[in-house]
Structures are given as C-alpha cells and as structure tokens.
Image (tube, rainbow, N blue to C red; front, side):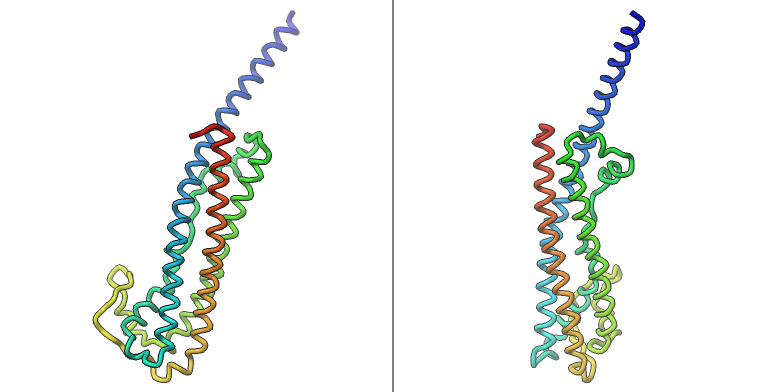
Length: 225
C-alpha cells in the first residue's frame, strides 16, 4: 500500500509539473506572438523607408551628375545631408521573449520540434538582417570621406537644424571647385549604398514573410485568436 501511495504521489506531482510547464509554454507563445506583431509592423515601416531612401539616392546622383548641377545645389545639399542618417532605416527586433527562450532554456518547453526549429530559424534570419547594418555603416563612412571633395562642409552644416534633423533652406551653396574630378568616386560609393539598400530591403521582405508565417503557425497550433 505504501508503494502505491508513493507511486500515486509521484504521478500526481509529475502531472502537476507537466501542467505548470504547459502553462508556461502558452505564456511564452503568447508573448512571442505579441513580439512578432511588433516586428511585422516595424518591418513594414522599414521597407517603406528603404523605398524612400532609394528614391533619395537616385535623385542625388541624377542632380549631381546633370549638366546644370549648379542650379540644383539646394536639393543636392539637402539630399546629401540625409544620406548618412541610416539609424531610421535599421531594424530593431522586439526580441525580449526570444532572448528569454534562448537564455532560460524556455525552448525546451515547446513540445513541437518543428515549431522550435521555425522559431530558431526566425531568430537566425533576424541576425542575418542585422549584420547588414555593419556593412552599410562601413560604406557610409567611406562616402563621408569622399563627400568633402564634392560639398563645402560649412554649407552642408546649414542643412541640419538644432536637433540635427535635415532641413531645406532658401540657399543654393556652390559645389567644390573641380568637384567633377571626384564625381566618379562619389558615384561608385553611391551605387554601393544603393545596392546595400536593395539588399536590406530584400532581406527585410523575406523576414517579414517569415514572421507572418511563424505568427500564423503559432496561432493555429495553440488555437490563439
């Protein structure tokens, strides 16, 4: 009898632990879904911002390489001021739950191994996108070194307000004398920026699709509306 009493107690305790772990699993999933919702909103906004950035890069190259570039310097200086501002075009994941899952062993609570793989793959895709930030920053730094050969620094400074936000002003500064000598080098870096912008946007679209699919799958598997 004592054996059966101990065994029954063991089963009850084991069942209670499974119940607690199942509740924690559902809490993690709910929290993860909320994080992914924020990610998808950010990615949609980011993709649109990247579209705008490409338009600005194209406009700057078109105006600067035109025969009458001196007539468009107000726009050239304004657009050039916006080029190094890449923070607004970078993705910051809402990954609080993901970090908990990885650091506290929470992934073991997810009993569906396919879901676990999908979650891990989503996190890896985020890291891939974030690595493009460093690549873009390197190109921007090089572009900054070439810009003084094209633009007059003291004039460029007038196109930022007291909060360092790019602004348009009613002045048309001159370009550097003999700027055309360095124009090809400047164009090369601009093309590099355009390419990394396209690559970032492509990866952001892929990540958005992955996030959408993962969120749908989690909701379906856990019957969450």
